[in-house]
Length: 115
Image 1 (spheres, helix red, strand yellow):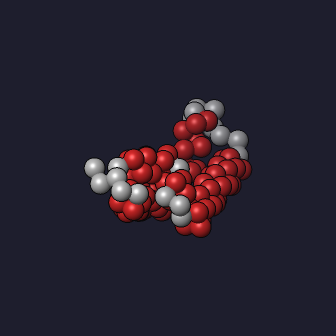
Image 2: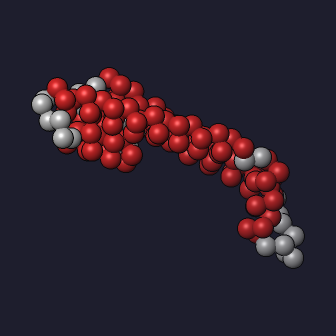
């Protein structure tokens, strides 16, 4: 029962870590690399979109708050990509936790721990 509890908790913290605990290093490494790549892409795209919004904003009207003007520019550019990235992360996270739990149970049975 030990791996069936520890592996999903680790995967909830960082998808792929539970697979590594369950002695599936290739699957775990691919998940860690995939989530890391998704994080870097999301961060880079966020910086790009914010810088584009700042450049498009120009010199805002003094009557309008700078943050409100930036918000208007970001909304005008569209933020649907952020929801897509978040959705991908949630899908990978759920898959990693469920997979780690299932394989943790298999590994526990292999070791004779059936509790």
